[in-house]
Length: 133
Image 1 (cartoon, rainbow, N blue to C red):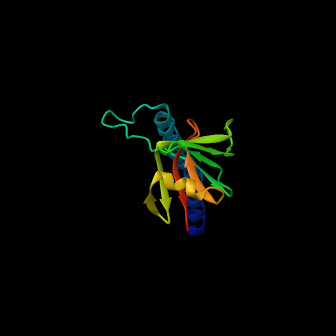
Image 2 (cartoon, helix red, strand yellow; image 1 turned 30 degrees about the vertical axis):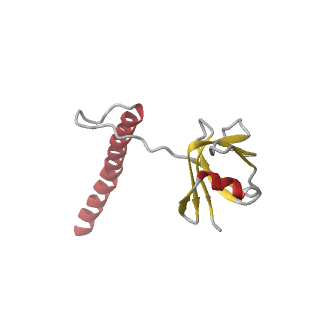
Image 3 (cartoon, rainbow, N blue to C red; image 1 turned 135 degrees about the vertical axis):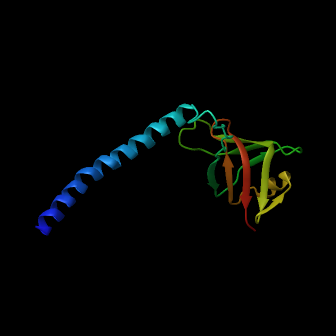
């Protein structure tokens, strides 16, 4: 008789478990849809500023043109979903050498060598230029 009760308990569990998982996932998906649509989950929720992600790109032979104020372009940069062939260096671009922030004009010293850049795919503006010496 104990064996029959155990089997019934297991069958109930196997019946209830998928329904419970389905309900939990449904609740999460509907909350995710509201979040993606931009509606707050509650009246007390605040909209946090979204962090901007930059597209990473490694260049083996840096082709850079820079003016005396630091602005300029880097040629032969491409990415998926991009239709341009160069990116812009602006006053907001930051240069890091061995992990230490350096002067923006230092980037042209690296012409013809390997660098790692990160840029905004929408505006084609370079945010970071990194390399190690």
